[in-house]
Length: 121
Image (cartoon, helix red, strand yellow):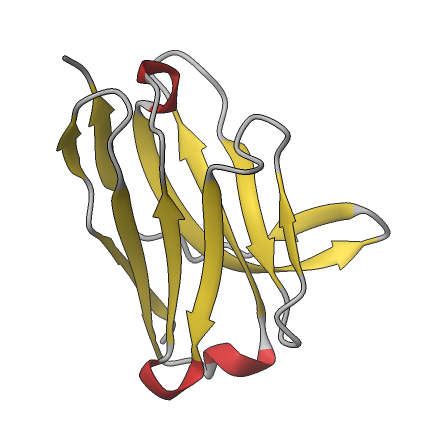
């Protein structure tokens, strides 16, 4: 059974940094495209970044230049390094595997519990 566990969230001041981790079991991550999503209160879940099996990355415009997605295949883990955080980045962050259909990334059905990121002074 596929299990995804997100961690690394917390409370950080504006301008601060966090690194999120997405650890997988029941699946070999290196063969998969993985995406990080976030969902703010009252908002829809939005795609933040993706990384393919060949480590090609893609980012939402709102996080370009501030967030970096990476993977450690030996640890079966994908990371999201977040810098220069803004209160608008406050959300629960989730990871998931998925596939690109053209330019659209479609996530799988195995969502983890997410990790809360709160950016506030």
